[in-house]
Length: 191
Image (cartoon, rainbow, N blue to C red; front, side, top):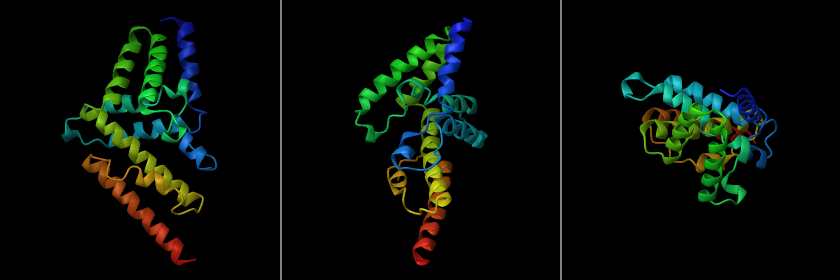
């Protein structure tokens, strides 16, 4: 493996440790999470996969760690950025090709896994997408609670409403939403 290319890869990945997630920045959330922090929590959630489900836990963890890797080059593109979804996917795929070329043959595995996630055709890819949505609503709830702004980040909940398919993740999302609704209700009744 080419050490210079590996160093370049490490620098690109390192950017994600400092890049704030765009949605939180646009909502003026103080001290928002980074892209790397988001991917890390998703990877940790992969430990919750039930062994009886016939899902590849290692693949889910790996996919969680690479699903937003292209953002180290293109940034965190959200629907509010004004870039059409097909253009976003094209930019991210080109970025992933560049990133993966730095790793030689090992990069092919990462590129294939990224494309698998993007296509959303396998159970693992769908599970990771559900983890992505779960982490988003959990993070929104945490910010509302931390900053005492119940209900302020509603769009992050409503944009994911009914989209989580996996039964266990759906149950977790329902619990988070119920806890949040209780927080919102107690906040309005105390005013």
